[in-house]
Amino acid sequence: MPRRILAAFAAVGAASAVAVSTAGASTGQPLGALGAASHTRTTITRAFSGRRARALVNAMVEDHPGAPAAYPEINNATRPVRAAAARAGDHQHMSLYAGTAFRRAEARPATEVVERLVSGLRG
Image (cartoon, rainbow, N blue to C red; front, side):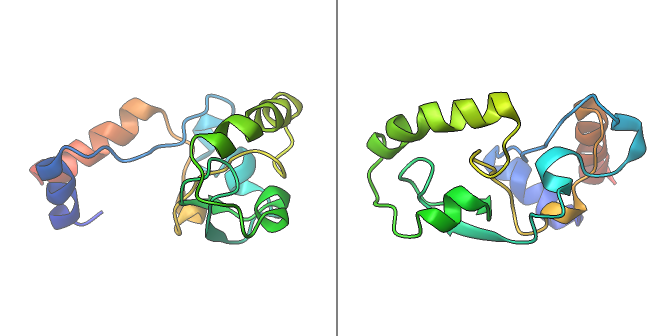
């Protein structure tokens, strides 16, 4: 990540979202939903919470393209569906928030990711 971008994050106190998993962490390959072949793109949706957010396109997103701007009502209404999907490992009905570069995500321990970000600021 370019130093100027890291400095901008630090200046506003923002944190970079990092997907962390212990299973297969040494492989350096995307895990779970991020690595699923069925997830090929992201979009902005209100399907999960009623707030605009970028998510992997799945059945939930495709089935609710016109979800209203109604937070927290939509969030509360979809909570049981999302929870059941998470328990079942059903990526098609989970809220899978991700940026546009989700395919570049690597399975690494959070400490390693933070160390790399910090070293980029010092570099």
